[in-house]
Length: 252
Ligand code: SF4
Image (cartoon, rainbow, N blue to C red; front, side, top):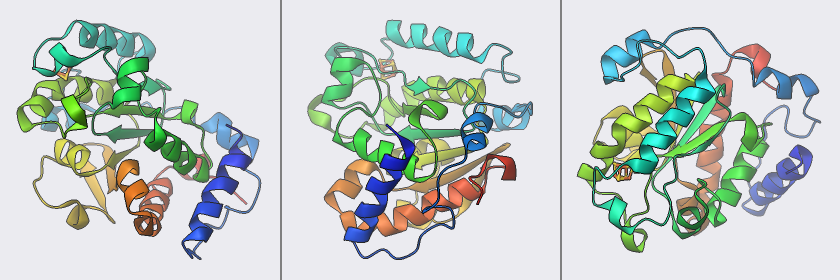
């Protein structure tokens, strides 16, 4: 989607809920350097993060795309939890292997199960607009979920299912090695931060996970049901954006 159109759409949504705070750059064209800089990447390793989280990679692999493809192939063959029995397709996630921002949702839904792509339903469209409002495109970030197979009846993933799938998530994080991770909803926040606190207590601030910065916010599905919370979510997204190095931020 064209960034200007996406930004305009998101701003209209904000306007419709009387949201008056707007980032400094929101009403200006997104400069071309924003697009190019998002595919460059820091060479910093995740050594400390991996030691803390138990991720299997000692450092980000040289060929990140190949590493992600390898993980996706393992996911496709995985039957480590009961969700394997009900899936049509696995949904490993997709996006730039060199993304500086990575989004983690909860679990695939019906549309994701059918297509094999993460966040392609109604919630995915809202996420696209949220990303666009940040001055980014979906192709510049990486999007995945806590579990890679659809839970039956769209129920929440169970604790043991998330635990079984967590190694895949950690390996994806280690492969992409993003500067900022946005946890979408309580399940992603719990999996990333290994914390049982309510999402309301975890959002609105920055969490250090090794070298990565994690910002928790509401899941787009929740925002569709509770549009009044878009204001708070937008504050979280601005916080996440502020964590990128200055060269990566949209400039005036
Ligand atoms: S949800 Fe994860 S752990 Fe469970 S079968 Fe699918 S890929 Fe394997």
